[in-house]
Amino acid sequence: MQSSSPVIGGHEIGFAKTYRTDRWWVGPVLTFLGLSAFVVYTTWAALQGNHYFYGSYLSPFYSPLFFIDPNVAGAAPLSHALFGAWPAWWPSWLPASPALFILIFPGTFRFTCYYYRKAYYRSFVGSPPACAVGPVARKTYKGETGLLVFQNLHRYAMYFALIFVVILSCDAVLAFFREGKFGVGVGSIVLVLNATLLGCYTLGCHSWRHIVGGRLDCFSCSAVTRKRYGIWKRVTALNERHMLFAWISLFWVGFSDFYIRMVSMGIWKDFSTW
Ligand code: FES
Image 1: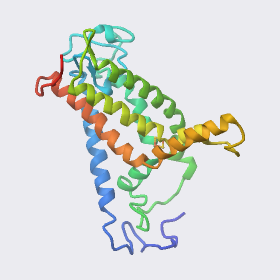
Image 2 (image 1 turned 30 degrees about the vertical axis):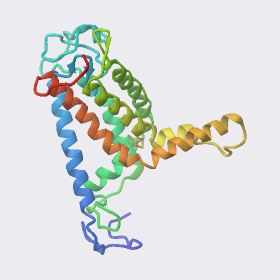
Image 3 (image 1 turned 120 degrees about the horizontal axis):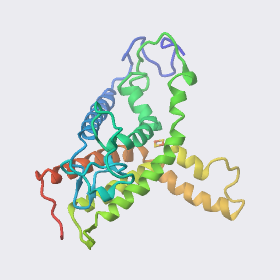
Image 4 (image 1 turned 90 degrees about the vertical axis):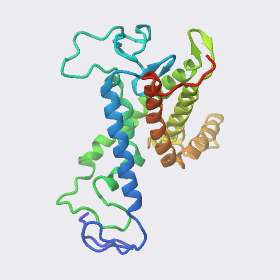
């Protein structure tokens, strides 16, 4: 469709032209600022490769740990590594950070999420910036042959996201044990909230909702379909709040890393029962 096509309830021709009189630009601007801040912080934190561990708290940006260099400040003990010490084959021009092995999975999941697509199509590429507001003019529209092919990765990224929810839930449980002793610290609560919010975001995914309740013509026809209907209703309740959980979980996963970084660096004190 060309940008000059008439639109029901339409807009004037040209980028950001509209008949709307409300402050439609507030949402796209806040989204731009929020997502930009998160991307900048996450990239910075992932490239540090240090101060991602304190006591029994592991930053969600670094979990699971494939390899560890235990000599780095704020690194986890070598026993936490799935595959052992930092590999000699790692290119010297790349920062030696365990986060670089894993962030591609949650990153792909978020980037291809149906909600985030709307958010960055509007806020970053103005396509269109809001309902009934003129989009950035384009010579061609490639539809399913363009970026949307890549977006189909979402259904596969979702399987990895489900695995990450399990891993981060285990990290949250482990955050209550330090040297074999049970206790509670502010960091334990931070990581429990992190796993819970990421679970609410992931289990509200449109692809997940389709898996649990899709491709059925009849919900009431058997015990199995009735069970699936019950699960589908719960998933739908999360799905209806998907944008909310997308934002809260995004903020909280970043804050979780920041909190552990601060206590690992000795800047903040972790109040705890240990
Ligand atoms: S649609 Fe947003 S996580 Fe799947």
